[in-house]
Amino acid sequence: MLSDAQQTELMAELLGLKRFCLSLTGDAADADDLLQLTVERVLERGMPVDAHVAKWSYRVCRNIWLDELRSREVRQRYVATAVVSEGVAAESADDGFGRVELERVDAAMQTLPEEQRSALLLVAVEGRSYAEVSEILDIPLGTVMSRVARARRSLAEKLE
Image (cartoon, rainbow, N blue to C red; front, side, top):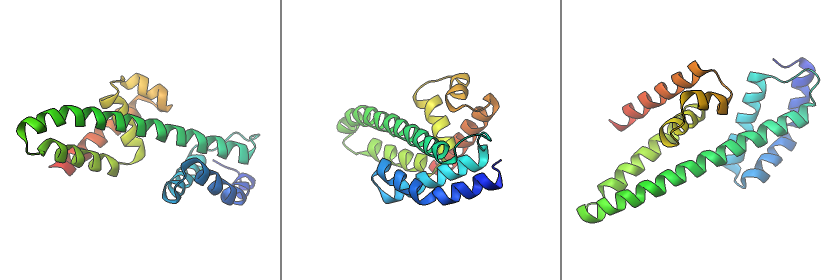
């Protein structure tokens, strides 16, 4: 939890933090999302009492963005691999069903909350163990299991 002084400093830093988000993402919508995730993370997890609020929040922001870039890279690799393998099947079937299905799955994945999506991608796409994901995301093992289960359930509902 942040002290009142830290909260005040964080509020004063929002404009600069938003500019930083925009410089990282290059897109206003992504910058807004990144800013929101950063502020949420700082408010939820807090920071050390002696931490410099601006430095801490910028570091959190940068780390969130790096995680997002990694997730996007994984999704792009997954989509590219699936498109290639589905492309072979689609060419032989000549109906494009595989591509449409892949787009449905990708769209459904994008609707998942970031924490569920990242946990599911690490487990299902990258093949990491729950313990590895727990270490990567710095969350308890049970939380990883819960997020993956909720993500799978949500995807199944959306794809029915």
